[in-house]
Length: 287
Image (cartoon, rainbow, N blue to C red; front, top):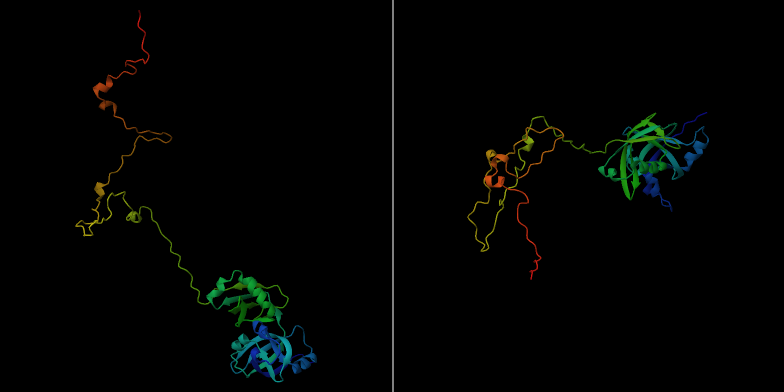
């Protein structure tokens, strides 16, 4: 028994479908609308469900895959999402070959966003997972379009496993993202410090320098004073004297006192508590 469907149709975008219902949602998915005669032919064949179709533009040698949404198209016509027509390089009324195929269930897929704005989405995997519910299959090389927050994001299908065309209906699939198109890796500048290299201290401030600013006169006239400070030479900077007798664990308190050999002779004669005291109460006179 023949189990393969094959037919050629003139394809149009969903917006060209004359129907009282709004079909704009079809553009957000990966399914096509076929004529009722296709359903009659498919029902007589040994077709497995869900049904998948291979779409071919023979003039441009372009191929993609899709599911089917409804069988309400005019005879001889089929209606495709606009992004699918772009992948097939088809214009309105172009010929497309539609064949039934069997696809294996997907296990892995990688996508590349076609714009940097996709990075602004908080949880891109969740957004993509929700959008793919309107798709039946994926084809490596296709650029699919998803809608989020009233914006359309295009993603190229970089890789699919286990085959180049896979089913994504009721499957557990691992999703990965490639760097967005036009993304430039930022340069990481690594500062290298070598031991003994003091060049990084060349521009350090040597200390406080008083009155180095510029002033203004009250009468508004220019002052004949050079505002630039005098240069400081290395020899002008006083350095401290290290304590060569320092020992670990020992604390030395430096006091502002004269050394013993510099004490004045008058200071050496000082005796503590040697002064005379005074009393505030007067002694009574004896009569």
